[in-house]
Length: 416
Ligand code: NIG
Ligand code: FE
Image (cartoon, rainbow, N blue to C red; front, top):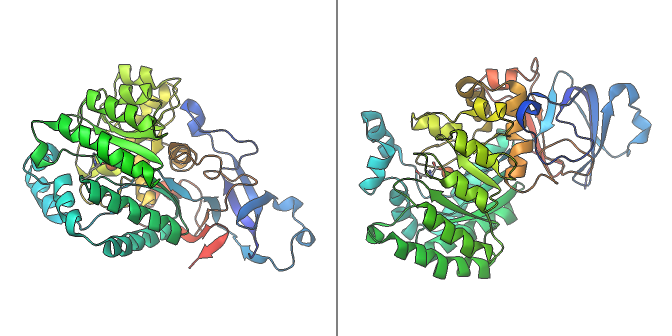
């Protein structure tokens, strides 16, 4: 494996001497930086880093490739802890319905939305799903993503849920990205189960979960706990059943109302609760001192033109905040984490330091990979971005629309 030395780095961002799982509250505005730095990569891992004043070329392997990063920043590659990027087709028609004024619930109620994707999923071929998703992965790598969580949930039948998860398993094998998978059988209630949704929950618990566990297809379990979707009771039942298979929850909560999703997630020690547009004092209280990462998905709130989660209030209360893309065909058709950073700062008034923490350290925690990714630390995986020549970290959220990433390095290898 070839080794890399990156030298003359204008600023090396998010350095970490000792592992801390995530950053919360006022610490989110702090970002450890070494100006005029070098970094050494060996065997796919970060071997060492330091200040150029201590740099001596002799100490490095002779065959190492040397990259001059003058005027450029080096950061840990983004971790995107919430996506649905395996899907059959875009849903641009619904988008026009939305512009005309139909709500998310109205579109869902007439069989659109998630059910629309689920219908297409039944006949989609595994190979086509894989190829399309691989394209999307190539695209997000170019925007600087180094790790991504991908959910099932457009199958909603045993066969199609397994098909999606098998595609994700193939992506894990074929892509240089670090990938985690979540089983989201409880994403929407199929039409034939309307009015008797507990029977669909039975199907998820008695047939889907055991099959998913048998093939070891999921790292996590997810439920869309919200009005018009799954209730707190449904969620509780599914998470209890999933716990028997050792599946930790990461759930969709409080996107459409004060659904109780946050509280039930915390009760089940969810790794994260995601969306959180409807977060009040009770929800904040439940999250404080829990191990559950509050994760905001600005792309979905922007695209659906809905309320924004109270990010500042959450951080002021001492909570951590993570930001993920929610890349999916219905509510957030983009996996561009740089755009998410801009939305985090413009729409949620988060500082550049806060958004960088929110898309690196905190999302790494939210996908259970904080020990291997999310910061520049000796021994962590060398998933890095080198920016174009840019003035400083402020430019990252500021210049929305522009790709500020020049080079993405995954497992110590420059991705062309
Ligand atoms: O995270 N909120 C639930 N699920 C997705 C939407 C998926 C879709 O509309 O296809 C989300 O936004
Ligand atoms: Fe989602």
